Length: 111
Image (tube, rainbow, N blue to C red; front, side, top):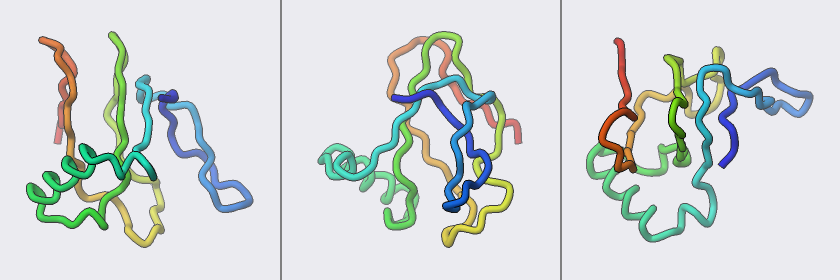
């Protein structure tokens, strides 16, 4: 896990620079490559396909977030200001909560 970042300026190679996030204090990791081949990950992805009716070829890689006590993720937009990628802006997010806490950890959508 690494500290959460936001997208910064575009460098000379056309890559977005990482900037330490001020809207979230969580740690995150991405499920890429070998992680996607894990049978349990494949099973989770298949279940998400069944629920959403959207093929996995349209998905981003899984982002796994880890929160400690008093960490947060403030209200935000999940796209760069000018998303020119072939996929365009994200239109759907699927949350899985892997926790055993009795209170806290919820997500609130104000709109």
